[in-house]
Each structure stands twice: as C-alpha cells, then as structure tokens.
Length: 173
Image 1 (cartoon, rainbow, N blue to C red):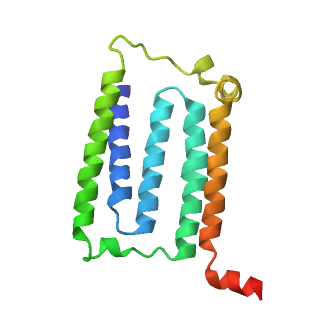
Image 2 (image 1 turned 180 degrees about the horizontal axis):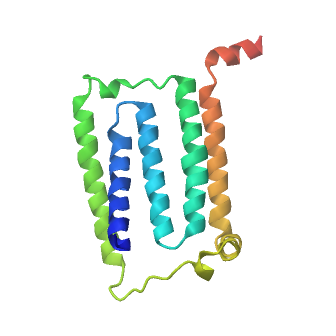
C-alpha cells in the first residue's frame, strides 16, 4: 500500500470517528469514537515522519484523555439531554446546516489565503524532541503558556460545576 493511499485511509477513518463522536447517542460510544479518531491521527503523524508527535498522541490523548473522559462520564452518569429527544427535533437539523455552512466558509477562507506556490516546511530539526522543545519554549512560549492557563481554568471550572449545591450547603453548616 502506498503511503498516500494509507494516509487517505487513515484520514477517512479519522473523519468517520469525528462524525461518530458528534452523532452518537451514547456518551461512552462518543468517547470510543474519539479514541478511534485520536489513533488514526497518530497514524497520520507517523506517516508524515513525526514519530514523537504520533507517540505523544497515543500516550496523552488516546490514553490519558480518553480515560479521563470515561471517568467523568461514569461519574456524572452520562445521561442524554432532552435535545436528543422529540421535544426539539429542529435543533439537530439547524445545527447540522449551520455547521456545514461554517465548515465550508472555513475551507473557502483557508483556500483563498494559501498561496499556490507555497512549499510545505517540515518540522524543525526533522521533528526531533530537542528541536521541538527548543521551538516550543522559545518561539511559541507565550501561546504555550496561554494554552496551559486556559486548560487550568477549564479544569477548575469543571471542578466547580461538578460540585453539587448540596455539598456547598453542608460545608456552610
């Protein structure tokens, strides 16, 4: 199998996993589709010669993040919301149409902004860990730190939302 054909197959599997995440009625099934998506993206990284990113994708995302998602799903019960029921059937149709329009607009804007004669650059230092760390902590230090602050705020928000009002009232007594 040629590398391009294998890459196309993995991209198709990633798209199937992404669609499964969005349209699955079960939260556990959505997490498993997300695992499929992460694994196929790791395979694409490896095919592109970025073995470090492929391994990190498997260890961090397919391992730790999916386990965390499944833990949270089991902790909160994983019940479906009323929007999936019959009360708001139009919401799914409107959401699908708006998502399609949004994605087409993004593809059009990106297509217009990329020059035709652009040559793709590889990862710095052929994707080695040292070169990646050097670029991450020098050139991209501010976005890296902002992303960590955003993740910390999201984690704290999740903890605050997970606590019930009953727990808060018991602490005050």
